Length: 182
Length: 174
Image (cartoon, rainbow over all chains, first blue to last red; front, side, top):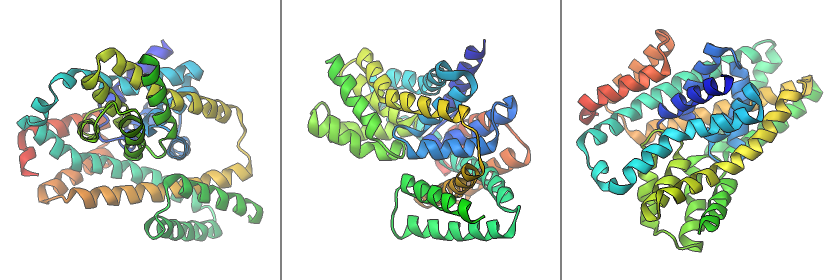
């Protein structure tokens, strides 16, 4: 029953995920809240791992969350669940792709989904940022460290065009260095 | 053919770092340049449609282009092959994480990674906002979604369903 529950939840998440890995985050936050299977801190670590390992981010997150909840088999079930509705939809539209691309309603929905997905991702990002801030605010040296990191990492991203796994690697190294000081 | 498809898409899954957007150049290299199964346009068209559909972009792209060119059976093989490296690798990591103890060093590392991910997400969101050039209706919908999710605690699934319904009616104004 655990496996079935897991499968259905991830099938739903996949069905309502439009626009890639980040769009699964609001659904995953909700899954954690509703089931108590994991908290937002765990999710943040999972996002970091999923962004810095090869493969589609959505599959990576589903696997690692599935393993946490129900072991090796859980990881496989969650991954298949999250991808399944997209795969079925692709198989259905493949024979007459151009017909769907030019459909009036499809075009409207695609336009309207963009702002709403950004809104959802922004809202869930806010929840994650708030958690990190609360973790940092236990002491003022930590808060200063956090501020410096945000500025430095933004510069690395914007001016030096570093890739996401490089950003995560730098963060991890800084954290390792910090553990010797504090 | 089945084996070749499997091998190629397994490679694509293994060498894609950073999700759907990073997958395109890797995919082009393997299935257009090296194998010559698809033209560049076919991959781009599949990618465009896959991005706009439910599910995982990379898996959708793989499924769609293979189903159009070959058949549904090979498309399923390709989809599974793209997923497999992730499943194998992340299962190992997931198992390690659920057995390891969190010590103070780990705590600092994870906290710092959280900051890094926070910055990455912020940067991605700014990029998305910049790229989509929203008008007043677009911003209205964006703010409505934030109010529903954070303020009224609506389910994210319900919000996506509502957005689909709203944009089917008024999407052309956005």
